[in-house]
Length: 137
Image (cartoon, rainbow, N blue to C red; front, side, top):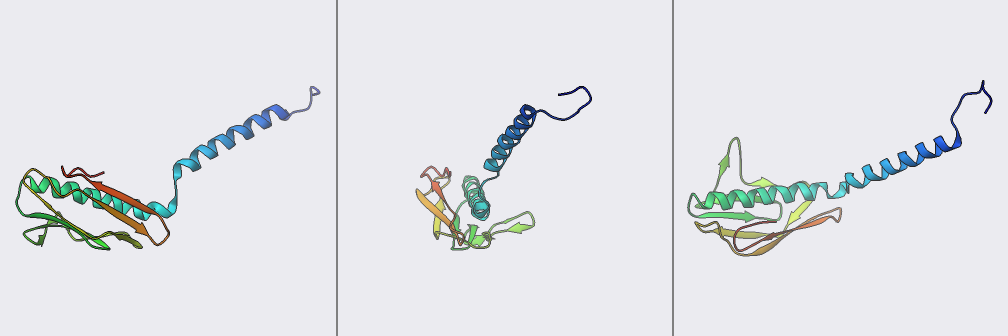
């Protein structure tokens, strides 16, 4: 280059382009699939209800978790439990359906081992495994 000219060299332009490409691939891979958002939100709601039912069963008697195709409920003696302003049953996200199940807990938080499936109209799905110990993942 001549002394009076200003600008970027080809090496600088290629380096910046490569860095931008690497950053964009990294960011977009972390964002994930948007069609699975509703299923993931419903999965988190069901797992939270499973943990709540297990913990409640260790303090009270006759605790059940009831999952219908579009809701989850924690009941005591057949009546839904109210937590703060919100109570059960909790409706799953729009377009998400669950495998119906009823789990009864004993005083040690144990229940029947089962797998709960969730699926959405967009084709996304998730499974929740409930161990006999009451642990859900």
